[in-house]
Image (cartoon, rainbow, N blue to C red; front, side, top):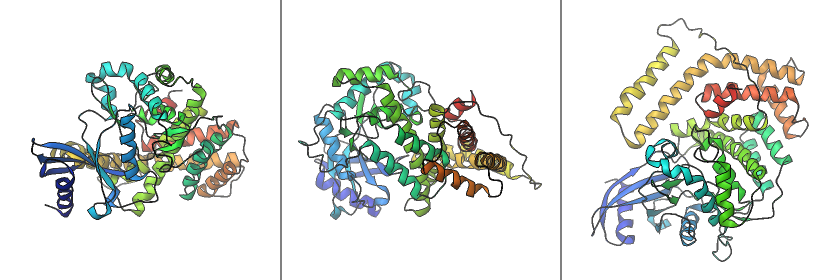
Amino acid sequence: MTQFEEKLERILLAQIAGCTGLDTVERLSGGASQETYRIVMGSTSGARTLCLRRAAGGGYDETRRPGLDGEALLMQIARKSGVPAPDVYYVLQREDDLGGGFIMEWLEGEALGSRILRDEKYANLRTGLAYECGRIMARIHNIDVDSTGLRARLQVLTTEDYVRQTWERYQALNVPQPMIDYVGQWLMRNLPKNDRVTLVHNEFRNGNFMVSSEKVLGVLDWEIAHIGDPIRDLGWLCTNAWRYGESLPVGGFGSYEDLLRGYEEESGIRVDPSHVQFWEVFGSFWWSVTCLGMAEHFRAGPDRSIERAMIGRRAAEGQIDCVNILMPGPVIEVPRGALENFDSPRTDELLTEVSSFLRDEVMGSVQGRTRFLTRVAANAVDLAKREAESLSEYRVWELASLQSLLGNTEDGLEVLRWRLVKKLRDDAVDLDDNPLRVHLRQAVTNQIAMDHPSYSGYQQAISR
């Protein structure tokens, strides 16, 4: 038994009624920001399954609000307010020496967004799921943050502050991404007028709630809840990244109309669809910045997993979604060049074989998180192959486009990117300028063609 398992067993014996010992513990796939484990323990009534949520690397982050202890409190309050959520049994303490986290009820259902969308088992559920999500969100937003003590535990974020903080978080990474700056400027110019401030779950999306074939069993991942504009939750559920390739706008399973009808019937409050779209744009903006942040975390640690690295290369997803909403239009296909490699086998052939080996042989012999990471590693190899074939041509195009846009033929690509970024941050450009929009649309399309060509936003962009 490892030290981790010994410490966990001591906690279970002391805190969970009827526990007779730890049988198994397994870290699950996903969870780049937090760790999730399935615990099977012995008990006086037979084997019992629980769930452990823990800070990445078993550390502590006492500067983060609400923190994992606050997340546990939120779920307990939500359950009492009619929101489906797992029961929390124990919050880890410093003396437990396992890091921040908590032990909660194991919900037996489905949380994988793609399965919820495609498995025939959930066909009947999907027909009413957008409506039900609207009702659940209305209940979350109706929770009294004062009487529950949540106001003291949660950050208060105005819409303007949220946009600025996200934009500044990206700027601190010191990576020039002109489309992110364009969207940041657009958001600042289009802040919705809103006087209503409530509890915001802030991660309510397909993949963050557990379902059975009949209903939503539990809303999960309350780790970035705050007090602010409640329509943030509705827009996040509609963000394209969480449709998993399906066309329906609400989580890939429903319509805007059904979502708003459920919300309005439960809350008695009408919602302006343009208000939802603002937060949908913000959701893609936030996701792009968060992906770039994952790349930085991968470099700095403590969790240098291939999962974090590949999430870092997904930043173009949110950018192409913003392109499709804010500046839809035609794009050209920049041809891929032939690899100037006369060795045998060539680099592209080697990468193809490595990818095939990982998918066809390794994945079949491993399970759980190792299987998940093997798939991620194969995706990384495929990305490297596409980049080897395309990067030089894309960069040649981008340099020529920036030279034309900025009237500068002397400076290199990085300098010109930074020059465009500065103009956007200084509000020194017309966001409706057609040459600017054409450049950004094409540059983002080129990037995602390398990073994630099967992404639905890319397919939408090239189909115009």
